[in-house]
Image 1 (cartoon, rainbow, N blue to C red):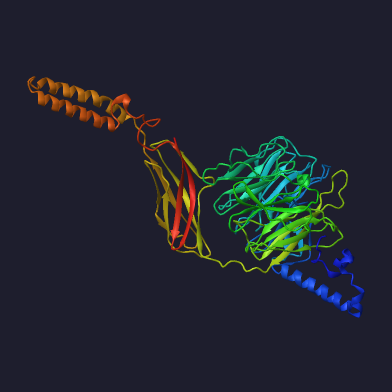
Image 2 (tube, rainbow, N blue to C red):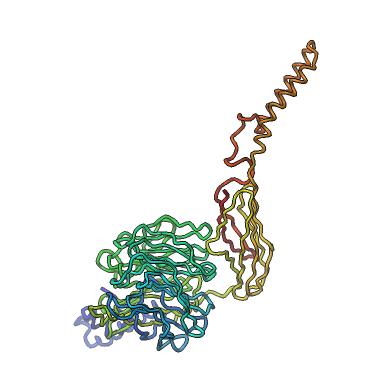
Length: 605
């Protein structure tokens, strides 16, 4: 049975009356024993949830959210914005739109209002795949969505200073329009350490593809999924620049891949689980990363219990089940990890009360009590979308999450749901702020050269928390005949940022040595013959010495690679120089005991 202790004690007793029956022997002390038992339960709940104090649920406005994307942000001034998809659930004739709601007051908002409704993205069919992210102190919320009417994925910025929409730009075309099915989005977004958006998207008639935005334009799309049925890419970057993605295969499996920051190469597909609920088509997964860099992904169990399942990746193709107890069952699972590595298993709704719920796993690995976070009416039958980003965590003492209510949906799909906001004050002790620096290369940094050529690439050194020390830069991993250096070799970001240039040079391969050794043998033989003819015929010992000397010279030539066609075969494309191949250069910045590294992929042709 579910442990509903986080609700009022009276509600718990009403739901589970048989668990509170007292024996006749308890006599006149029954009321006192009952009160003591209730108090003990409530105290246990407080201890289990000491790190989170939840506020009452708040109405946001029309539109729905998806648990596999992140649709709530918090600015550096602690202002909360919620971005919704106001589309009909099953087609319909209502105008579809993407909406931005601003919370008031800052910190823990108790009301929301839509901003710049005049310029919100809209069409007469539907929207899909909405995700919103905010990079640190940036004033602009970056938003990606599917414009189904235009068969395009679009990207737009919302200005939190003026509270106005920017002009949408096209990310790419969608092959196939999802005009009828709710929540069937294939679009997700993550921001790298430079705040650059990386997007995965796709239409109903194609697999998902990856692209990123560099210098104002989108890279050529790269297919990363094997079927047009694959959907719901939940994305996040780690501190090494690796992009991690979990997604649903459309049947009973949850998959995972990652993208190497240095080479841009995608890993092989891993199976997180092959026993997931087919209800995943309108929910899940939600991916997050802990402070140790371990990836976590949630989903709903495929055994028809609808239990919340959580898997953690320890190494390639190794996923460990760390799910909460069987009391956690519902729909629309979300995932959040706080600054102390406590894990929050969020659900859009519990199965019995149809309200959002949570269970918290401590950093030590112990699950706490199960909590219902709201009461009705209305019931709230929707996805849990929590604000979380490892690279851009924002205020660590607040947990912001949204879910939605499906009540009132009509058969024509004209109703577009209603979103609600939940806030939790986290009483964790955030890690102390340490003055530090970070290294950042252009997105997907890699260099391709022909042996003999040179190349250069810029690197940015950014300070955090007032860091103002010199950083010594170095580059290692260059192959034979190549060099890699950084200029200047030392920089000081002085609380801001500084830049340096990485220079890569290589040595051309040549066939000159082959030609030299080819002609060396005949030259030596000719010289020996000339000397032989000048030696008197009766000087037998002198002639023997000459033969011995000539043979010795030819042996030396052979050992050094001479002898024409009898020499060791040269490297393809020539001899010497920098060998062809793919290499990884490691750029390191060091300052005292602090050291950070990043990688560049080098291909030599």
